Amino acid sequence: MNKIYTIFIMITMLLVTACSNNEIENPLNWKVSSFSYTNQNEEEVQLSDFKNKVWVANFIFTNCDTVCSPMTAHMSKLQNMAKEEGLDVTFVSFSVDPEIDSPSILKEFGQKFDADFGNWHFLTGYSPEEIKEFAEKNFKTLALKPKDSDQVMHGTSFYLVNKDGIVVKDYSGVEDTPYEQIIQDIKSLN
Image 1 (tube, one colour):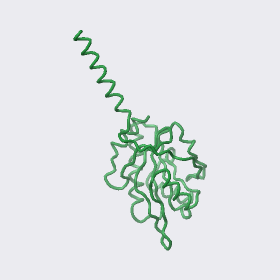
Image 2 (cartoon, one colour):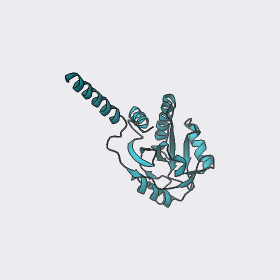
Image 3 (cartoon, rainbow, N blue to C red):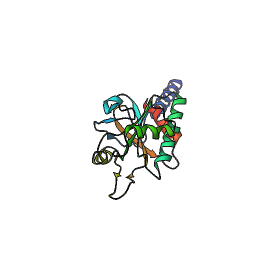
Image 4 (cartoon, rainbow, N blue to C red):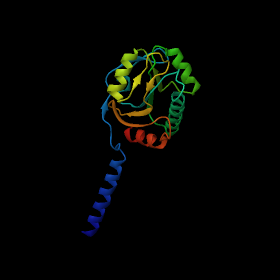
């Protein structure tokens, strides 16, 4: 009887440990609403294209003179790490300055950071008002271009979105980006 009890406890512990690896701690649970935008290749990209896919999103603009280059470099490093791990994940960078950031400008920007466009979309094709509302509603972040400025105020997080289109986690995209944690969380969602 003691032996059966010990085996039961061991199996239970293994199951609990296995299940805990598949969960995101303190998930945000923000549902991403439907969208249809244009990527760097002038292709239409919709939320439905990411159905049953894990993706990482951020907000950038090409004329940024502060955080966007470091964020894009960090996203590029994350993309390379995911590729080395053989992970099925898509990357999405929403431009917060769509009046400037045409598909060709976004493509040139991504190339500076060795972006692999096979699974990284740089999106535009909406108005500044649309992206402001989209960022606030779906990612709880700022995307605002003040009058008389060529810079845009915006959030600097990376957002992990699960296969159901739910934002489950955010991470620093500028300083101390937790690459290993993001990779681990992507694994747990795949």
